[in-house]
Length: 173
Length: 150
Length: 128
Image (cartoon, one colour):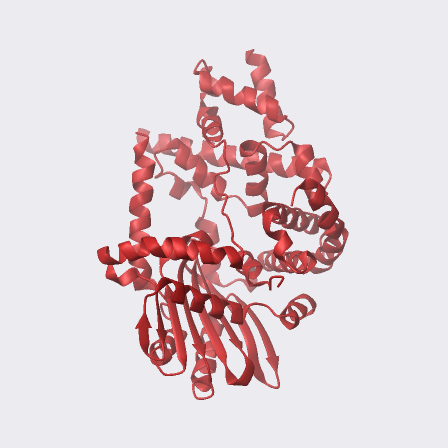
């Protein structure tokens, strides 16, 4: 399935997904992010979407799961303690400090990003899609993509700078 | 210099392969179901190794198919009930008080190792129980589980 | 040139650069004539420059393609078994163990097929 086909079969689902996501998350920016992520995931699987009896059912289920995860993460008391601890330690400079190889460090940092940010940074910086193309695929406006991309890049930069500064400080001591 | 990441990766993969067995189904009640019924008559047990499963981002796949699960059912349901208490996500279809199908995501074994139990009853008392472990997440699994066009 | 790069960097972090401008940035940081205060960015762009191909692009297979993959990889695992007997695939039917690749594959597929979603499950998932 290529872009033209994708636009015909998948994009029209967007409004329905967005409505559903809004009802589940009760927050329109969360809903927007959830639908962006679902659309990108579907795009990544575009070559096998033909195999499903109903792309709509797949898309709705993905949206459902994602929104439930978002809903849960906004209610810290609903998450078991062990889970909070693991999320808190992933991607912190502490673990990254041990990583000597700069490339592997970068890889680790990118892996530690939230899924949506990781997917957008990968598409833009590695697969070389233009922001407008990503907007076209997700049916979102370019501004929404740009803002997520900016957030992702700044986060990568901040974690990276923090990691090397911290390492330098330790070496000086 | 260039070889270093490759070497590390190879070592890591080897390490994963050898530790996969030791950690499989750790602390789960359904491990006992596999142990008890895996070699009985009327039961088919499959275990796939990591290298077969790599493409699916799984480390381990174990399945049990019961032709007739009547005798084993109380044990299975009790085990699911126990393991369910630890599960992060539970999705069940229950009709007339009995679980028809169940999808359970357990807490990660360690970073990047997700665990799932799948259970479903079939026609004439048949039942299938599957345990999956690996990097794949719930979305990946759900997508795989969607019925394909004939 | 230098001011231009700093401007591009700002645009980059705002998510406003085009792919062409990003290539320009990567080329600049790859050249090595980087002013000291910008050196910290070298590894970032070097990393992105190295990854021209998607770095974690996992192929997922349809059940039909599963067969081919299983067959292929089981060949490998048979060799592997001699090295490490504990990590091979097998099937036990009525108490008898087999390691025949096709049979193992068929039974694994059957079990997975059994637990696949039915219309009823999809309905329940969506409208609970």
